[in-house]
Length: 203
Image (tube, rainbow, N blue to C red; front, side, top):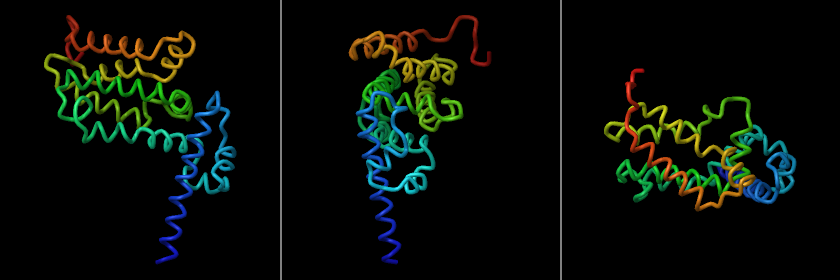
């Protein structure tokens, strides 16, 4: 039993070291593609085999790092106070949730871009995307008169895609607060528009 506990502690320690090393590397490097599994293993002081056993592949490492950075927001969404927490009125919570996504991706531009552009499957099937989409859809369903909450959630999240944020913040140099204001105005218009004329939820 002591050996098993020691082995488990070593695994946790190695995982934490790898995440810390990956975090530092992704923060320093200009492009996410510049960071390799070998770089992370060397920085963490572990073998590449340890890295692959813990995370599977580079995409698995990216997901783990993304989730670790996202944890404070997840806690705020699940059990926190307004404006992110579950007790917030839906008209206030939807823009607050999207603002949180935008700010998170602005603060984690390289990581978010690497995660959304990497992998062999659709980014819309990624666990983190499905979680945000399910949450937004559920909150949108609480707004009277708003139809097709599933598509609306997709459309709103499209405004926070990492490649769009990278383009706006990088190439167009849109200031952070202006981007937040633009997103808030967009969300407000969507929520105020109600159902489209001539369309029903079944259509």
